[in-house]
Length: 314
Image 1 (spheres, rainbow, N blue to C red):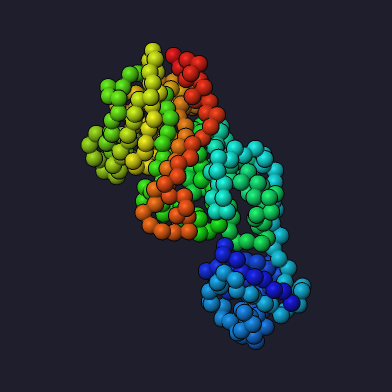
Image 2: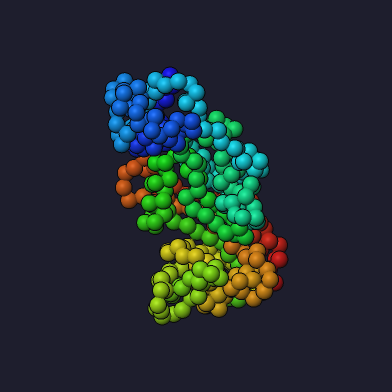
């Protein structure tokens, strides 16, 4: 006999889906048969395969131990680095300062060490999460290019992920970037509007002043923080969030980012001077994460700022 208490990460799943996901030696035909025979119960009562599980429900399986073997998982994330620059953490979210050169998610060439793998290792070693005890996997709600540094939002449960994704979509989490661009800006502060078209095959975008087929409107606000020689230090607020928006939009108005080999002047260089350094939470409703509303978080130890102060952009 096996007893499992359902937690909030597993709530909302169907009984049959949860059982299939949890046990790898229990044939579906036997599972359905045992549900009909009342040998599988929820809260000591008869259940159905399609019944939804709730937080705190007790699932009981009166079956032989040989078919109640919990799926074993390979913990590749334990091979990831344990380096994690944490800006803020609570029981729902964790704000991580991603360094330039580190991937957010695995790709074909670099599967093991990335921010999401480091997050899994961190929470596993803290005892807050284990793959065999929860169907939820710690996830990032936003992502930043490998060669851009800055704040990524990690979520510890399904509720937090849903809310943060919704707030990002509705622009209730404001993102601010630091960047160094070529040239002196015409205005101290400006909100620029244009249209962006993405080329999926080339992983590049094109920005135009007028709307074209398949283009999407972009709005980028910049404020000049400092200037020397041919380098302007800007704070940029994303009013819309499109692929490569800051890099392509600023290049379009004649001020490409330093180090940007894709949209800028330095062909072959891909360490663009861009850092997602600040987040502001500004929620419009009450929810499980409302305690974050009105709070602002900043990254520390930003190499881009150090390089600028040392006048390395010339």
